[in-house]
Image (cartoon, rainbow, N blue to C red; front, side, top):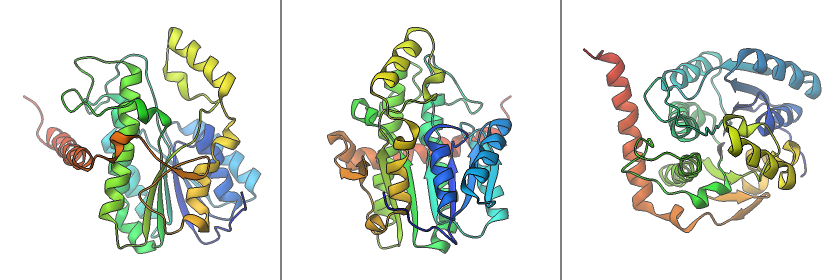
Length: 294
């Protein structure tokens, strides 16, 4: 891929202490961008930050620490970013996770749904004013081919009735694509683009949240067919930087090429219903914290 200069651009990348997120942050820094890393773990984030500065020769690599599975921390990190920066040209929603067993966040939300979908849903909207002020700007959502096996279960969004990590993960990644398409529709007529991508099966530490046989099988699959993280980051970087897609929005990419997402992902009624429910979940959570339970 031909390298594009990103001098003068501010880029925020979530989930970049390792894996394709770290490669994405490093390459954006190498292109001259000011890169703001959002990492959950401070020590790992600082180590990645130092590594990226050294590898890129770019000192403009900032670090914000937040656990994006918690809505309050999503809000905090958005506020911290706005206190430091007045521009944002590229937002890469890369952070994600998966767990063998059902895990609940401090907000009472299922971890996979909260981290992979609701966090980027909220973070993106909190940063839209800065993106608009910096336009042309790009939003890049790192989804997965697993969305093709997903279905948004409105009767059991949080997996309280029946949980499986495959169902939860597929649902969260399909939800991310619904969000991409609906947001692109709402931003039509602006110079902000939003696209989703499948990075490939990546040989990384992504499946660390899996246990037992699921972890073993996941590791074996990654070893046999997985791309390395350098190759895995290429579609993210393409959407974040390439002039070829500067006016492309509301699309799904794999291997740096536009392709079709699942048939179900194009259902407009479902994506609009999911948007309303997502707003309600965030609002209900805010009310719950404002009004303590008796």
